[in-house]
Length: 173
Image (cartoon, rainbow, N blue to C red):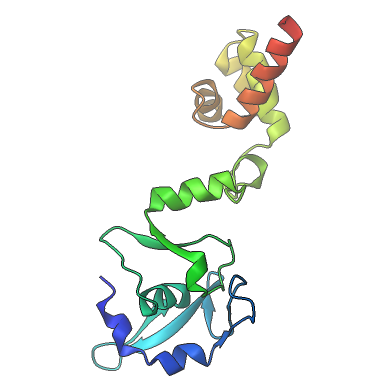
């Protein structure tokens, strides 16, 4: 999968890494970045340039192995870190679970795709709990019917559902 990484000189990597004196601290990448992650260019066929992320290169350079479908995850949550002590192999699902557990996953108001905010989602949920018709909720709160359906099926805004249901249990208990 990453066979081309051997085309990169380790010197090209090391001259762009600031190693900390402490073994357990991050090693900062000072070269080119993409999406916040360090990257190194290597030659491709013809005049084509290819790129590999610096943390992947470091992982492989220090003896790490990647199976098909695996990626390199940061245990330090620092995308420019290349310290192999902070890098582990895993799947996209592992990476997603890391993000959720560490509060890095954007959901609710923090999501760039959100059409409504937490307050409005809470209003929709409260109306649903009162058995108000979905079309009525959609018109009254100026929320698409599709959004109301997705909230009702708990596909979206699950964290608000948990808050609202938790408050209802507390009031009833």
